[in-house]
Amino acid sequence: MLAPSPEQSEQVVREAMALFERVKAGTDNPVLGNESLQLKAYCLITLGQPEKVLALLPETPPLCGPSEPLLASALKMTGNTAEAKRVLQTGIYNEVLALFNLLPAYMSLCMDDRNRFEETCRRMRLLADTFHIDRLHPGLYLSCLIIMAQGWVSFGENETALSVLEEYTSLAAGNIYPLRLHGDEYFYLLDNWFDREIIPGAYPPRDESLIRRSMAQALTDNPAFAVFSDHPDFQRMAKSLTEAEKG
Image (tube, rainbow, N blue to C red; front, side, top):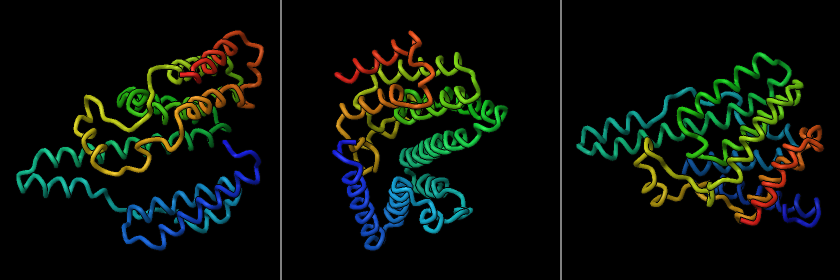
């Protein structure tokens, strides 16, 4: 977002993609290999090359269960119950976050089917409340709320959309900074692990002021919300997020 021109922005994406290709070619770590593959696919989407993404990624991932239960069983058998709990907490945490990447993507595809969209919203909110996603990973949940609000606008439910944007504004302008991965009362064994391991995404690769600006722009510069440009509640929310940019 700091590139002075679209051409330079594209150049940066292409340079990043070349680095991901280099990691994929040079690593024997399957986790790094898979992450570099997915990040290359993200670059291709950004560059408007969906056909290459379809050729790059398998349509159906391998149908095998997670390894955490087996690893935890082995740790328990060796008497290391605390580490077994940590391994399972990590597995649960990762699967919950995976759901909150899948659900908004599915929600955006259901904007041609109100019943399915509404049910997806309902289930996502239940999961969010159960796992306290607004506190556990607010950045991820904010993306969900924007897509939810866009959906309600597309169905003509403007008041519902404004209510969702109120929730978005309250969270985005609240005490959620600095954004970083962390545990909570349930995932109480993860903080030391996050501090000990190199976790991609543990800290956003952007300055906090840029993150705050992008959160404001997700509301103020979103074409889906142009219908609210003269609405006093929307103007108040926009002002609140703009002021929050200053920290």
